[in-house]
Length: 383
Image (cartoon, rainbow, N blue to C red):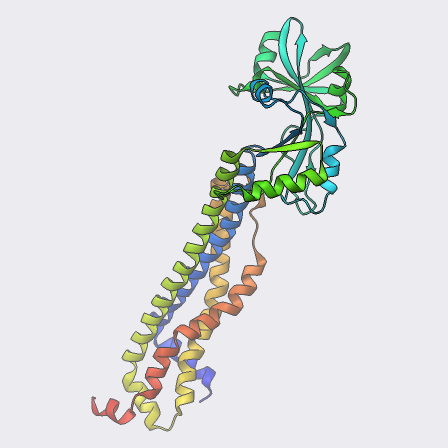
């Protein structure tokens, strides 16, 4: 009888064992696919959320008075606005930036109130980054108003405000943050430069870099050394708490995925192996009869391994469909920020279709060897 017919007859005769084995493979593949699909969303969400913690590098003029800088919250010394683009174009800079934003901030008297007028440039993102830019994106002729300023001046979205003789449209009013942002008006950098009579000037470049989770100062020294080559007129300040918090959160996400993956594989391996060993024990007499009838060890081993491959292939397809359905159903409710990016991972179907049958056959190898190495005479004598 051909091997494939033996395999099908075996599955039909041992329905319970076959269904349990198929369930084991399907459940494991489904869990892995669902976890992997949502884990990708988790990584994207972690990146998005930790990115929104804020910039962790501030680049200011080398001549800045640091006591005044920390007291005011911004530098009183100017740099050319082109410095941000020069930094972005500098290929050998040590830190791998994700976002660069040039800003100009100054205290400003407006209708008897002391506010902070801040101009922000469009973000310069790294060539390999497709994330939306950080910070506020302000269109020319518009402003974004802090909560306290809006309250005191009675401003609302869509209204207008005159600053230094020019009318600006209020794009939106921010909610209360409990920081200096509440008394800040954000505008497009060229507009603020004209309002402050500082054309082509900035006093800070905000950035995100990858220096984190290290106790020594060598990486920061290297960054500053490289920065001196790109921007000799500037100095760098790293907000270490923000950098480390961002890095730890991302690393925890990676560690969790690295822990779950082998755990799922181990559970699947144990489940399939137990079922395969049980199947061999239940069929000892049948195996002895087959051996006595002249079936070779290779054909009997092929029966068990072929069954494992077939169940692995069917389980891979069923598991992929089930796991994808679970990810698409529950994922958006868990990862609200990146819900739209949760999509079926077609590459997982190819991976599961190739790896799962091989994995099932590997796990069934030991039980198959037990089957073919048993002396048929001893097996039949026990009956």
